[in-house]
Image (cartoon, rainbow, N blue to C red; front, side):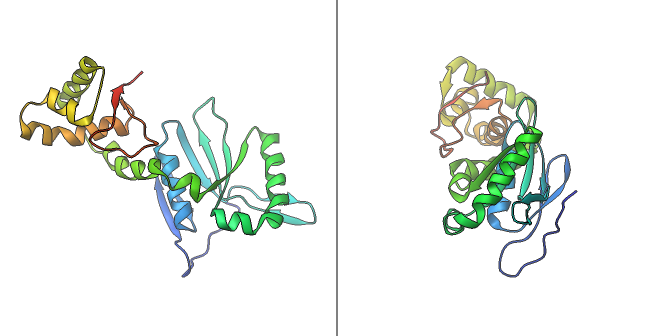
Length: 208
């Protein structure tokens, strides 16, 4: 249960973002929205809660981090503040005691406190997550998926173009199989470096 409700704002992006397997989560900026999407994409993501705890800060103040992100074991939960890099630099003196209190609070509970900035969030991985997440939940033809994975296994490593050509000699077959290949990548059954831009010339490999 959030300890603070996020008010509507005409100056920034506020609203709720869908989260798989739980109720939607509230955000109060486009950067928070992007952070939530990036978390959802991770294979060990379990859940996320906005405005999760109120932490006492020396001097009688209080601090509420933006999110508590839970992961599948053994990864510990993350208590997260989402901040633009410019705001972080401008508010260093104000934020330092709050962050120190959050680190201690998290440490006592087996959580990790971290700050996520636009430099951490708005990366090629975010672009890939934005593109691939819809394919994760789109039904994929199992026959085409099997042909693609077998072709990739035979090749060892290959580009999307090469895998499609090996599995489906006909152009129409390759066109129909392309969304299936994106589904395999989105569900991590096919591996690629998602910290780089995903293209038809990216290098793919088999899971494991």
